[in-house]
Length: 157
Image (tube, rainbow, N blue to C red; front, top):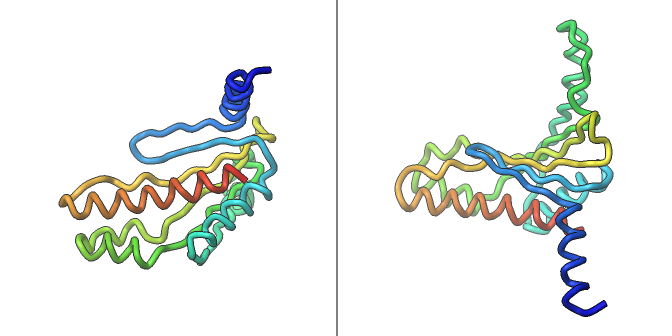
């Protein structure tokens, strides 16, 4: 196999392993793997940025628990957690130029598995709204880059 063919094969293999979708309010990626491994990769990628996870929301457990009280026992997720964290530098940059940017902090990356796709793990985060002054938009682009970099790092492990 030629070097060019090998490169093409590796690119196709990677594309089959990961997919991404974006809309106005979120970025979502999917990788094949185990929930625990992907969640740990995200936690490691956050730590590699020098950041600390300040909360983990156990969404699947909450939905399972409260669904019984609501009379709806359908399973939304096999597993779902949101890892919440903040960056002093990015937060300061955004809030200094627009104090209303406080709504973006803490940042959260959701890691979840759907019942219909048990071998696929999704990573998703809110897309910061590029609004306000040019300085505010620049600061929010920094936040989006941080989130992007963390997810990309986690997916490459």
